Length: 70
Image 1 (tube, helix red, strand yellow):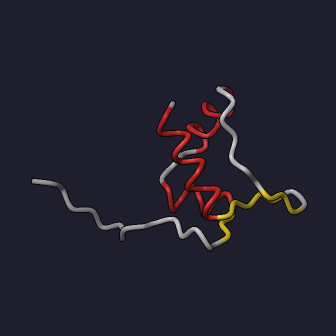
Image 2 (cartoon, one colour):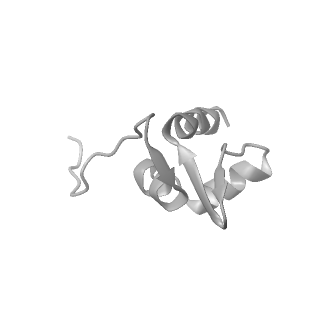
C-alpha cells in the first residue's frame, strides 16, 4: 500500500511564470540536482530580471524532460 503524505499534490502550469525557488518547490527538484545537471550541460531557459531568475512553465516542463533523460 502506498504511503500517504501531508503535502498537497503539485503540478507545473505551462502558462505560469515561476521564480527559481517556486519551481524547485513545485517540482521537488533540489538545487544540488540542478547543479549536477548544469555540470552535464543541461541548463533551464531562465528569464533573468536583475539578480532574480524565473522560468516559464512550458520551459520548466522541457527542463524536467531533459533531466529525466540524464
